[in-house]
Image (tube, rainbow, N blue to C red; front, side):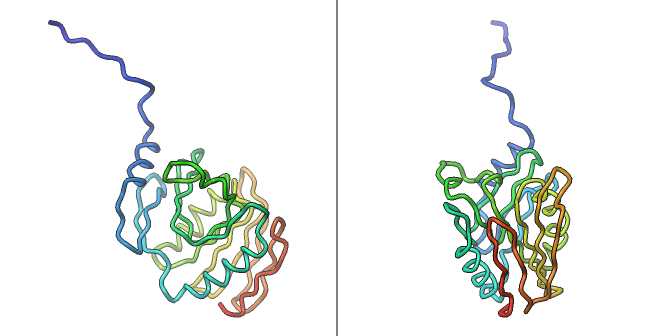
Length: 190
């Protein structure tokens, strides 16, 4: 009997799809998240407990001004950015609730109306560079809460070349957010 190649169904998954599936199937330890950054699976800790009050204060303010049908959360969800072949689990996000209706273990990054990242020594570079580039092509508002410099930066007006505008204030100052939020974040408790 001669051996013959047997046809497979559909094209082989891309490296991105394979890595994304691996991230989805990972059983990361409590307090850690796995993301696809620069084509690699990166496991990093969630923000430290000392960030809880700041995260909660920011989430509550955002939820009160979120667009209809959007939810502000700090839950560990993975968002996929297929065009950039990335998948991130933001520290805080505001997204269309319908993005969570599917059966998969990740949501489409296009559902995000805002992302917030709280920097740490280990994540600072990715938050300020890698994620800024990817979010800047799609997500309307990106907040970088820089815990090392005690500042918060709002990036807005995404374009294919990144964000067109940014505003930075020190903790304790009000940070204006553009529409669809249209209010100023109170950072006095930060």
